[in-house]
Amino acid sequence: MSILSHNRLLLTGAAGGLGQALRPRLKANCKILRSADRVAFGLAGEQEELMLADLADASAVMAMMQGVDAVVHLGGVSTEAAFEPILQGNILGVYNLYEAARKQGVKRIVFASSNHVTGFYKQSETINASHAPRPDSLYGVSKAFGEDLSRFYYDRYGIETACVRIGSSFPEPKDRRMLATWLSFDDLHRLITACLTTPVLGHSIIFGMSDNAVTWWDNSQANHIGYKAQDSSDVFKDAVYARTQAPDLTSPVAQFQGGGFVTAGPFE
Image 1 (cartoon, rainbow, N blue to C red):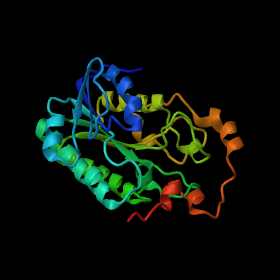
Image 2: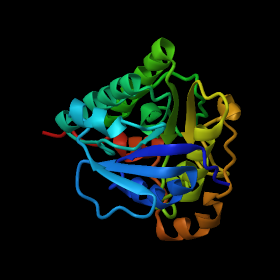
Image 3: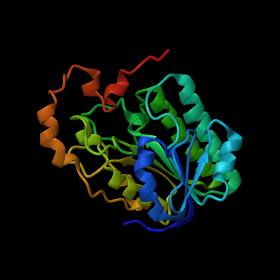
């Protein structure tokens, strides 16, 4: 169920894969959806505003944030890459976002963190939000920075944040690892809706996953958010097994939760 909870909601990273999936869905959560990205991404739809803004440009981010009630922040680099683009989009960019939120009086942000914050835990382990970060990549490091920065802005300025450690959000799982990490687009929207509407969000970490039988993540510390997944990777299991080979258990890719990210790079 979606709840119309805000007048103007900001969606960053609207041109990306998850941004495109959420854009039509998030209109149910607000009167006006302000969709933003640094590249052109089409025309504004009904009850929608479009803005172009580079997250590394503080003045552009300040303008993007004006008149906003809450933010769904998907913007930035979304995979492992060289450090410079990660620095600009995910480190400087998230600082600019929170500074603009502070100055504009925005008090609730849903921050798209990542399972790669904890990618160097083993697939044989079950972890929760109290486990220390173990990033598997520069990308994971940047998301851990964003989680720490958002906690500072909550403790100092009272800006509530849900750090959603998104697993693998695609139409269906692509491989055996994703049977544990899969998050359907509809469940992602349900999770964001819960984060936007829970009476007291505080600073919360929640793993973004559907109701999968196999899981490495325990969300019991986020029960106050009220998220209930309705989809599951289980219906895809037979098809995934049929088209994929058994993993090489001596490979770090199969040993660690981060999968291929634990061996990606270095990037020149």
